[in-house]
Length: 166
Image (cartoon, rainbow, N blue to C red; front, side):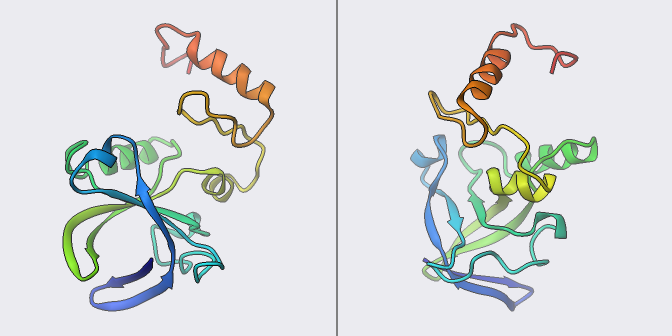
């Protein structure tokens, strides 16, 4: 695919990108969400620095262009992420965008950082963490299988999970 990013009518970034449909529930929605990949094999290795979100988000290697029309109220996730960051939690940055596909306007979408090992490395500045995916039987993305099993046992053996335990 080819991505062009404009602000106030000015082209700030353009490159070939990898693209796929993103999400579980949203895959069946009439308006799809997309995951955008930046890599040397497509064009730019990352989104141009200091344009999206804030400098702490760089390097942006993946983005989600999220349709929230079917799954939740528009801006509900963005608001929750903003509140989370205000109280000190790590949450993806978002911004509304007007999406065009092949020149046809698709409406307002939410541009979001993609939570991945690269995202966590950029925000924490190190790789000393275990990244667990919520998909059934998903292998650990980082860390050992034993660490992952211990984490999954901890996360699933708490019923109900209290805020103090978390």
